[in-house]
Image (cartoon, rainbow, N blue to C red; front, side, top):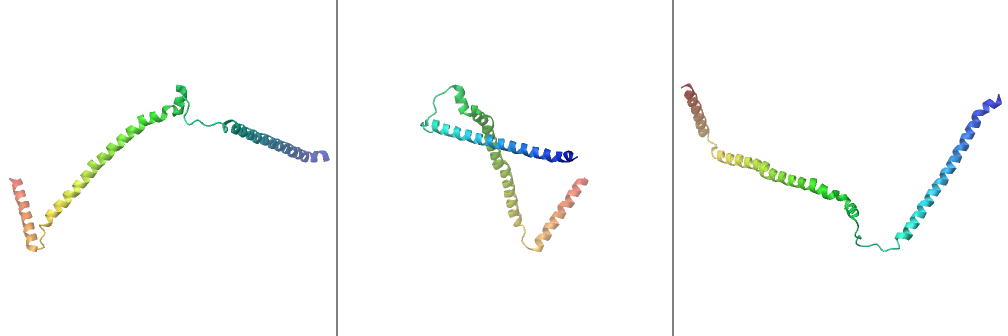
Length: 149
């Protein structure tokens, strides 16, 4: 009976042992990777740091030249999207400045000029207001008589 009750403890000890073993191997692999990176960095430094870097790229094949220019994607995007977008934007700005703003500014000038002319009719005398009301009523009566005929 004692062996049956000790079985879970033995299994747990075995799991702890396996975890420690795996953890140990992980450290070994990690140290190997760090060593490999350090060796690669040292090799690259010794190989490329000692040579002078050319200021002008050497002449290469058409594929290399295309790769250096990002396979001409900047040229394609510029000619197909950017330039037409710039022209569209410029024409819309021109239309906004001349069309929309011109209409708004023209309407403002019309209202300002009309109000300046109408202001001259306002004298402040009651008799002129009464005369203008009488003239308006006479026009209204005259229009009604004209419609009846």
